Image (cartoon, rainbow over the protein chains, first blue to last red):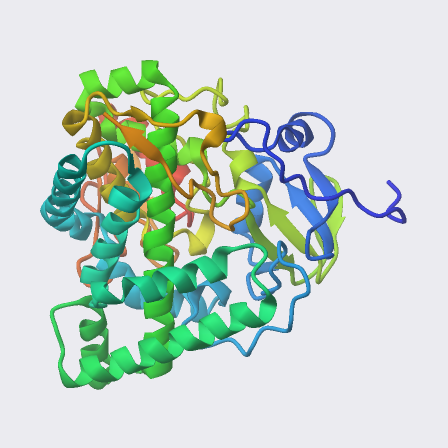
Length: 400
Length: 64
């Protein structure tokens, strides 16, 4: 193939709000599952769309996560030096050593212990929603506050400060945030978290941040204040916005698929399977993951040269016919498959069991409490988050 | 069927516990995989295969 012509632009326009762009499926299934692409940042690199290729890159140590160019933002500045403990930008051997400090906090069993408290939080928000009546925004009443409150309690961040961290998160995730504002938002938030760490050291609570501070003070070598701030940043930002958008988007897609919604209403025990299928189907990391090659690597007959960027379209991969049959159909009775919504390899989402637990509680409760729930606006008027790094709905007007 | 785990590779994602809770658990102290049953009954095979395919770190293998 010739590489002298400019590569085509990365497809971002969806034809259906719940499916990846058609061009992505076309690339994956026919023309070129591994192809050159120009990203909105102006960078040229490779786009991978097949499940098997993406899994192989995500488990291959010849690819690094350390390239921190944001492929979907224009006019970028050089990022500031990486803070220690920022797991998303670390490779082995540092990455597993730091990650291991947190894994015990997010085990399946720990999350099962949290279930009653999550149920209580969901019930309280549904009570408030019922009392309000009329047309309400499900994002504001349920989808955003539930995961925000859960991660605040878990970490030990005052929920009263939510306006602050939610607005910082929006600045970080908007694709068109000016680069200086993005950097300023990070810096300002780091300062807030540094103050929080100092305050907690003087007055510890029963929470994850206080535990980590105690472990640091007891001589756990890898943890210091810089690492504590990085961990808090990552867990707080990644912990609320992702799950919030899964709740909003999942509710929308269930309301638009009444046959699937009826199944869930009639058999609430399907909630676990339904959550796994919704995770596969909706893939809020809709623009994919990125890595860059540390050395020349051959994949599927293509030579990825050292230093080149590979974008991994996990949303397209979750619709790969090689992964499952009839992938474009939502089917909440499916056996779970190895979808890539939480990534794959050593960086696979640390908080995935927390996300699953929150989603299970919401979707085993929401339609039982509001069996007549429906959209209060046509689908065409729902503001989907094509302008954000995390996909979902900005608002979801509902009534019952 | 004999199940083998590689605790050095494990990244503590917990997929195996979800897939086959009678075979896999996570250690309390660091979330790393622990084997509850190294020679599970044949009835567990589909669940164990699912755990193998969903493990992000390729830390689980099965020998006959």
